[in-house]
Length: 335
Image (cartoon, rainbow, N blue to C red; front, top):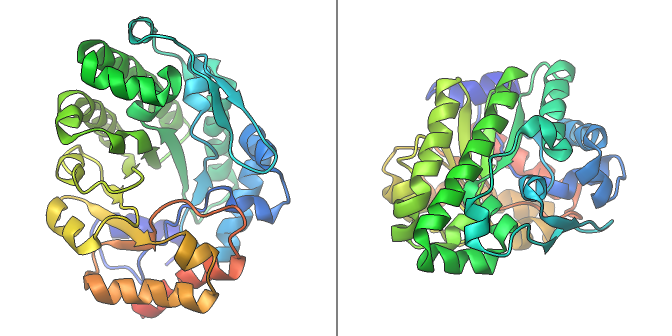
């Protein structure tokens, strides 16, 4: 099977030759064409070149169309600082109050160059690679809101001013819907939503204001024939029973989550994907250790219907042979 066939079959519950490898390679891809991180974030052609080379070398089953989590917030007016050797950071939020944020209007993907770059990269990936799907990143609503208002202030707003916070999340969600439409127009079939800041809110806050956003986003993807994936960093056990009901197909679980417990929490509603340690088990280890970490996780969970990978994004300088070992292990498990 090629990667397209493997991924399609697996998400449809059909027989595959092995489980797909959806490891979040992140800025690790920059090793393949020697670009710095700022170029990776600003030059979509160089980003795509690096991603395709990485896919071919390490054997992941998608072409990563992603770099950082600040494109949308930058579109709303936040100031972003770029660096040659690490991912960009939020320098200044776009707004100073939640009241100001709630009055913002949805933005159009075509009007924001770094957002539309991902659409162009997706289109070119489809044209250049016939046996592997691109998997395109959109930042989730809570994370966009946090990066537009400021993470700490927005977390306080969620508690103290829930009505305005919810209104702002609705604005952000409309922006995401437009982004999805633009990606669908160029043929996107797989999109993953990265919403790490959502893991910081309580189940009540998630149920009161964020779950509707996720439901709308994944419902829209489903209506367009797009398979959706959710990535939230950290321990998300408190949210898994809720996120599993949003219409998402694949949910990543980070290293802090107990995989067997997570399987119980989602009760077969979604495909889980995780969760060896990206630092201890991949970045700072040997290829043999990485291989065994995947093998041992498979033995621990005893489940063929879910996916195995590092729980979060790989560090930039992760050794290539260690990343290749993940695919080797998946082949061995399902041989």
